[in-house]
Length: 339
Ligand code: SF4
Ligand code: SF4
Ligand code: SF4
Image (cartoon, rainbow, N blue to C red; front, top):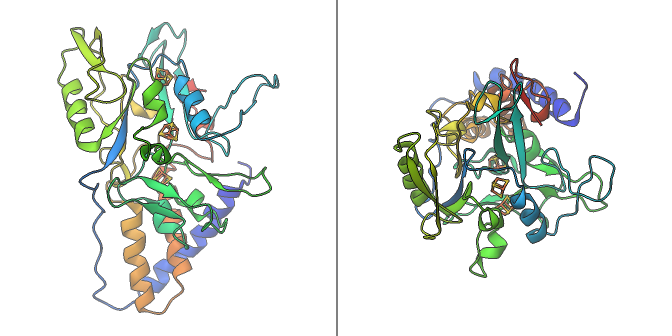
């Protein structure tokens, strides 16, 4: 494994965590563990249903357009936008799991499946907790995790702390920023919503209130596989429905509880351990653990940066079962992979 920026930070953090463990034994008694933060009552989010995605990538183009992001050429033709992963130029990418002959959609063996990668807008975000200058913030009403480029000092703690590998540092620009989806909050002032959901022709990406999306998730999971069913486009209440045979979903809603829960959630016909999302994350948010530790250490007058390092390491340990290095596209499954 090569030493990458994130690996360096992780290893540095591992040293910090050892210090945390040592210091915690000396910390004052009575420090109370804080609970996971909850999704706000008026939270908004996305539902990505991989069984509806046709891989057209209209959502990727729309995301670039509304966020003024440049094309990313990964095949040397300088004509097309061809990002393979999230990057400083790409907030949203559709990836393809593929196995064997790839004959059947949403089948793990000799099949293929789609997955969307973008910020999950965590209920209790590690990036917000790790940021020392509050450049990353969670809106109290909508729960959207936003980024303030003017407040950012470029420390990249958020990059290292995110258990989903989302925030990206713009290394190749003179004034680098952190790149990540902000759920198109800049469009909401104009009465618009997430561009990726607006353009999706099948409703695979759906935007709406968290509660309405929860009801839609429950409705879909109660469908009888194979029976004709209706699926809304854009938002759950758009009334613009299309019909299709109900799929066989795997019995897991990704983002419901992972790392404390997220406002972007996923349904899939293929087990999530085949897709580019880290599995095995704890239900307790890393931020809840690290801030409990941080408060304990403040009480003992020990440098808070040591606790910050603990958060990074906790996030890494939580996701290391899934991928051994920085990039999800380095993940190899014995019976399939994705690109
Ligand atoms: S626009 Fe919709 S169907 Fe097309 S790739 Fe994006 S999520 Fe899939
Ligand atoms: S997915 Fe990562 S960047 Fe997005 S809110 Fe969660 S911790 Fe922050
Ligand atoms: S919500 Fe907006 S910024 Fe986020 S992935 Fe969709 S189009 Fe891109």
